[in-house]
Image 1 (spheres, rainbow, N blue to C red):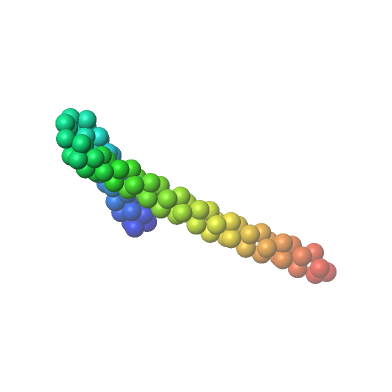
Image 2: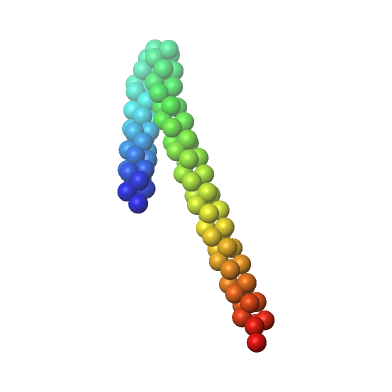
Length: 92
């Protein structure tokens, strides 16, 4: 359980860092007169977009794997229940 809390905290920190990167990069790019510097700050903002996208992919893959595990657990329980019902119905 503590691992989950630490992962959530780390993900929250990364989300905040990517949001700060996006905001800072875009605001700094708006104030530039030099095209090269504007593109450089825009690249910083795009790094924030990339980080946020990667975090979303990681979160969805963890959610999908958790759903698959829950489905496997549920199907194993239903198999066990049906077998026990079959055994109890066959015994005199």
